[in-house]
Amino acid sequence: MALHSMRKARECWNFIRALHQGPEAAPAPQKDSVKRIFSGIQPTGIPHLGNYLGAIESWVSEHTQLSWILTCMVRLPRLQHLHQWKAKTAKEKQNGAMGLLTYPVLQAADILLYKSTHVPVGEDQVQHMELVQDLAQGFNKKYGEFFPVPRSILTSMKKVKSLRDPSAKMSKSDPDKLATVRITDSPEEIVQKFRKAVTDFTSEVTYEPASRGGVSNLVAIHAAVTGLPVEEVVCRSAGIDTAHYKLVVADAVIEKFAPIKSEIEKLKMNKDHLEKVLQVGSAKAKELAYPVCQEVKKLVGFL
Image (tube, rainbow, N blue to C red; front, side):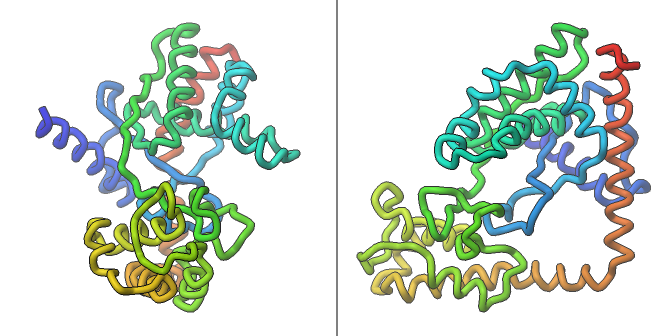
């Protein structure tokens, strides 16, 4: 059973990889019975350390169109039940809170637009996936079996915390520039951010997330970028104080990002290639999304 699942997953990932290689490498359009994995992160801002294992999706206009239709089908209390709404409105009391309500529906549209069957998610996105499933089931109940109800694939993605607030995850939108390590940061910027990372008054390097969030976050980052187990990272750091350890972690991150930064610089020099990649990706997304969106419009009576 495990081998069968691995083969199926490999087939899905091979298909996704083929899409990014252009039209000539892409297989024939999928039938509804074929599994389709959807994964994406916000396409805004500069990717950071916490996004390293993520994938960026190119958006097309059908995303917002389906999002609007789905928004008309979901009740306000259902959206206010989401943890993101409760946590952020309670903490920040921000005026732009409406975006917190509409974003999960847009996320659902992103997934359903491609008739996705499986979605890799972290634990913090489980509630949003439940909303996606509810919307798919609600639409199918009213208009017939149209959307597959996507299943969550819980992933063991590294949970990278803010360098300035170990109780919060690292975020591209964090107003504190020292909190987030971006892939495009220079070595000097990375060193500065780790120097300023919040730890505590104990100099020993240990991994105790409940009581030593800051130091434990550094250990987790160190383990993630080196591929070493947390226990081994702690063992190798015996006798090193946290001030010195911050520089050790910074060097490890710099080394990890070096080939990525090199490739970014190379790609930036070839704008024609980048534009072609964007055009091919957008065309392929449009090819998949347009007929789904048109059919939804017909079902709800817009066409």
